[in-house]
Amino acid sequence: MPSNAVLKTMNFIHRGVLAVTRGRLGWVVARMPVVKLTTTGRYSGRKRQVILTSPYRNSQFILVVASRGGDDRHPDWYLNILADANISIIDSSGVTKPMTASLPDQNQYAELWELVVGKYPRYSAYQKKTDRQIPLVLLTET
Image 1 (tube, helix red, strand yellow):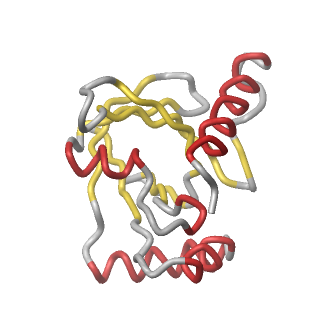
Image 2: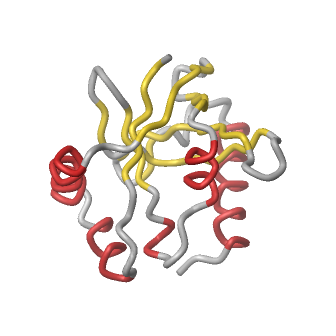
């Protein structure tokens, strides 16, 4: 499982690629669109930003996966949205969009999980590494 240091380093490098290329590179990783997700820290109250892939999108929401590489712990950004669902994203348009994070119900989860692992089997491998159910998070415009 990736350590916090590895995850933070990956995000730092990714931010660097976006900055150095002025957004021309870095908005697609592993054939998935990328978003910069900003949450409010559940303890600090400070804005926290993480770069995430979004394996599924439709006209109603953007889906992100709280996999943390199959770690037994939920990612911090996920715990932050449980405390405060008011978030924002920046996508390849470069525009900050206020959004709300929510969790799908059980039926929607099963449907979406099948879509995600059908197209990106790595998520299935992550699920096999952990006993926790990997959360799916829906991001909708406010």
